[in-house]
Image: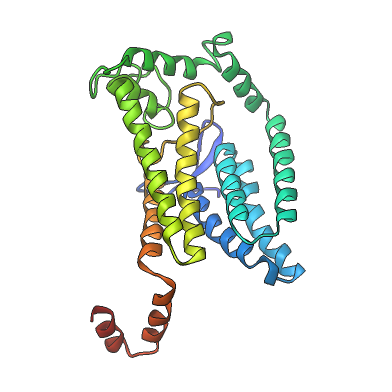
Length: 295
């Protein structure tokens, strides 16, 4: 979008709203999730034309991610769509075909950009290019080494002082390791594990099938992104431009994740039997609906 787009390090992922930079991809992950739930849960009821039209609505935003380029968000969004297809009533024969095509397409996209291949090679041996592609990983290792068991203390990280790129965002977990040590790393990981466990437990307990799928998809999205971020920072996964949910700096990510939590609370509060009551209130006058809502 010429005029309001913001280009950072070759990526066109942000919009300049004047008072802040907005990253639409953070919100698109969850809107795609909602669209995918509707599509896969009603797949058998659609005509062939409707199937093609609604599928294009899921594929087009993924293509935009590639053009930005934002392969990290593309990978997260694609995995969420696959996860929803697995949980839904989507026919299994189509599901396995979709997975196979997705893997082939992801492999082709990976090879199409030389810098992505370079990232993978740097992940395998970061010391081969310590001042180039392996620089971030090596500095991350140094941060964890400096943190030792108990850490340097809050605010005492040295790596975040222009040594570690993206220390406030993608590599914030390295700063946690340096300032809070091994104990802080374990506590942070444990909080995400608890979040995932409690979230899936809530999803199983819901009476609404769609609500259960929605909660599961949100928990999976946050947990999977946290897993990828920690894996990159610890050097066990190739480098990707993904932040750590709820911890990394970034207003778009925080607002989108909090909005997703709001959807979880809505699914908990509104059960299938409540929907009939809500619809009946809609037929009343505004005053009568308010009285019924607060009675």
